[in-house]
Structures are given as structure tokens and as C-alpha cells.
Length: 209
Image 1 (cartoon, rainbow, N blue to C red):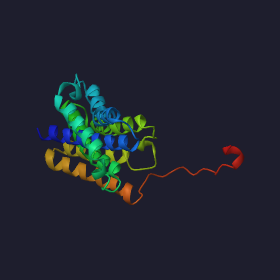
Image 2: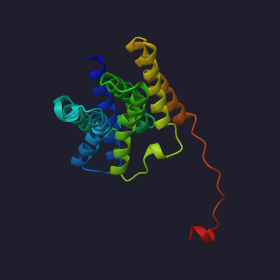
Image 3: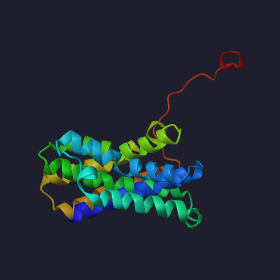
């Protein structure tokens, strides 16, 4: 029950992130709702299909639709309030990232996947919604930039899997995984932490034309 609530909470904050992005891109109400729904459930749908949980929870549980619609409406009609938060899209995205890292991994473990595969699927659960949101709003997906996004998700998911492998209690392990993921993502946002970028020669003006 707790992890179901966390999954819905992650869906809500990812959907808020999608709705906020849609508002910034000047989409109409329908467009904002669509982006909110896709951002909220895309990662969970992929996770459920991969572990054989058919139909996916997003199609089998009305709460996911209700949560994404509520988030979309909130993002559309209260965008001026959300914008008071510094870098609102990134903050909501970071919150959703850490929650999905936990719930995606826990659900994969519950369906019998190995800790390694569960961690990888937990990471994919995290990045799915953000990638879908970015593509719908014509942006290069955050996961492809030199930021701690997928790495933060994998670190959080890995902590959950390691805790499971060691036989540690689920709740403290989940809290640790979420905390690691959130810390790394916020450090990427506010401190500029990122993965190394390959050194390349600067192109001449002739090459760039």
C-alpha cells in the first residue's frame, strides 16, 4: 500500500512537471493534459510491460488517470503559483525521479527479477516519463545531456536493490535510495555536477556553416 501511494505521488509530480512544461510551451488545455498524462505514466507503463504486469497499472487503475488530470489542471490554472518555485520543472522532476527509482525497483523485485535487473528497470521507470515529456515538447531529453539524471536514478534504484539483496527492511532502504537519487539530482541542478564530456576540437567557422 505504501509503495502504491509512492507510485501515485511520483506520477503526480512527473505529471506536474509535464503540465508546467506544456504551459511554458504555450500549449492549450488539452495539450497540457496530454503532456501531463504521458509524463506521469510513460515510465510506469514500460516497467509494467517489461515485468509482465498486464494491463499496466496506468490502464487498470483509475487513480492514475485522476492523478494526472488533477496535476494537469493544477499546472494549467495555477502556473503562476508554480513558477514562484525556482526552476519548477526541474524540482518536480527531481522529486518524481527519486520516487520512481524506489517504486520501479520495488515492483520489479516483487515480480521476481534479480536485484541487478530490477535496478536497471527502476532507472528506466524514472527516465521514461521525462524522455516522453521532452520529446513531446520538442526538447533534447534531459537524460541525454551532461547531467546526473539517469545516473542519479540508477544510484537510487541500485541502493534499493542492494538493500533487498542484503535482506534489509524495505522502508529504510527505500528512504535511502530516494535520498541518494534526490541528492545527486539536486547537486546536478544547483552545483553543476555532471558526467565527464569527451574533449573535442572546436569546429572552425567553415565546418559549422
